[in-house]
Image 1 (cartoon, rainbow, N blue to C red):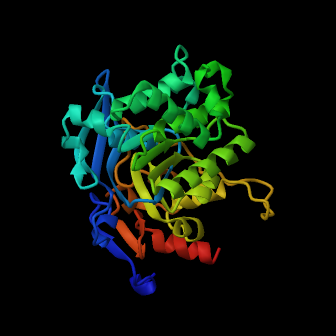
Image 2: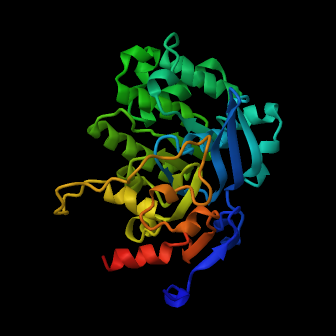
Image 3: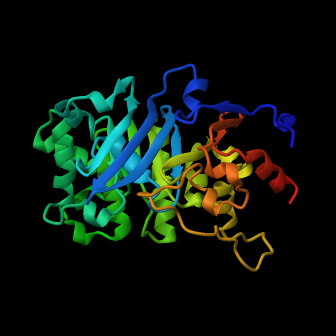
Length: 352
């Protein structure tokens, strides 16, 4: 196939996600070439491999990938809460509002964490202290970052509960008196108590029933619009991504393999892994009797394959795919793909 079939494609260096080079303004969050490993029992897990992306105020980025792909590690690195040891950042920069948080002293980072950047953790059941009332736990966050009296802090805690749809009077109750969905709302209220400019939401709808999921998603959307908060949504649920996100980054084996707008990823996917994710989902309009799962298993992060990490499972792979890591290719404005076979894949999708 001639290379001019897709003349807009541009090759970028493999160690830098190219979106940073196409934006002239300074992004609110700019992650550059992040590389994180975990070392334990003389084994090294390559959890995050040369990840870069940008996010502006008011935007939501969806990090999509299988369990163990490195999504939560990226979020914890941005929060500065990676457990060290066993985690170690080998390389990279994380710029938040033009300040590299990897170089910020711990004392200053304590003031930033919870105030400027906050995180909704995956399991609300374990994120709350069972021995403290809900109000006391929200109050602790407020008092840490604001010079307020206890009375003012509790009033603010009640306002945050009201904001997420829980009566303020329930601030005197304990976590076991709340349902799973309400606990998740409490965790969101705690994260938003000091009006953070960046919210990291790690699987915020996990273990919730469909009705509560819809309520939590509507809550997050409303808060983002009201506060103009930038958000990273970590999930493996493509339906949630379609509902919430502006931009999407697909992660495989600790590396972003495709990135772009929501429309790019959902309507014009180019990487075989991204396409495999969509083909493995049931569709009401499809006539197939069987789903098409991605063959094989994700690679062992302690022993990643040479070349493209997806090539052992890829139906389009050739010998060259096992020899060298593919570069990032800009296949459309703001749409990037890390695959040397993307033109062949795109053509096969258009003419199956």
